[in-house]
Image (tube, rainbow, N blue to C red; front, side):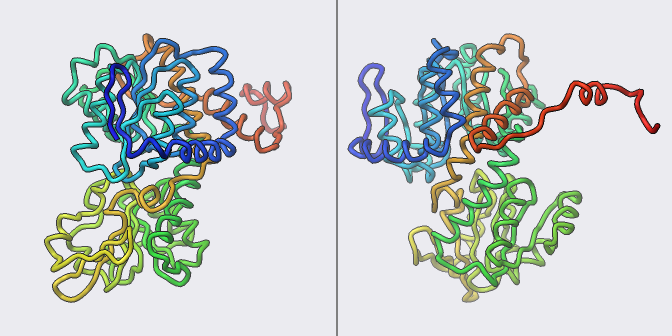
Length: 426
């Protein structure tokens, strides 16, 4: 359902779903107390007043609460999806119809429509950008450079996006400052580990209804997402194998008790292979050639480039769809390889993404970093910045408070001791 009437422009599946979307948004808000406190302050102080904010994020009930918070802070928000299969259509309808956030997102949209939506957000001439994978910023720098003088700064939430943006900065291509929300401890240590760990398994189970206990599950990549996934899979009784290219992370995985080997060694014994790396063709043609019949392949990294689906298409004699999020590729030697959610983010395509309690901290970082760059953009160079430590600490303190957890405070004597070099063995 598309409408363009003056300043009211949107593209959602069905506006009649808006009431259902509001119920989903309210349910998520119950688990997002930190963002709720920020929203209350934003309503009083309006730190984003007069600014146009263009956001390219997963359009979920949790994201809706972020968008509502940003609008409470005075921002004129436009939102599009950062993945064609992650949109919750009722939420997109509710944001557009009830919350003053024109949204451009339809679950299952094709690639052309996806980029049309990004450009619709850019048509609003944003002063601030908010990205989940850097597609908005990349499109701005590739095809909409005339808008860049109006952009003050931006934020980026994902590991993949930060990698892209750091590459842009290294190449001197990035033309405004970006705060890497993903680098906040309260984001990647919790969102990437606990969120990805739980939601990826949720996607695998919903998509396949296959018992994990006793199965061999291969985790490609042992960053924070890989750590979380390996831990949760082991908790379900899976035999976890880790593959890595980084020797330090590979060693850590081995010391954590997982078998570590190359993917070529792991493929013949794997029941599940899940990528969480942020790189391209992690599962490639020669891996498909080694997989046992019935292997289930999924991706929980941001882009579907992690699985070489073009090679698999060439190898297959036919493709069937036994379940809504399962595509079975029949290879010419008779084996079958099952790909989940078209190789896109399985936790959002086949399930609902991270739990709201985890996104509470990630989106608190987004909101406070938007406020930070709105106030300090003139002091920042066009490069990628980490989240200020005081924002990270404030979010952790708010989260602890919401959980009813108190912590000790250093005494003045202890502060002096830590600041001194003179005290030692006596």
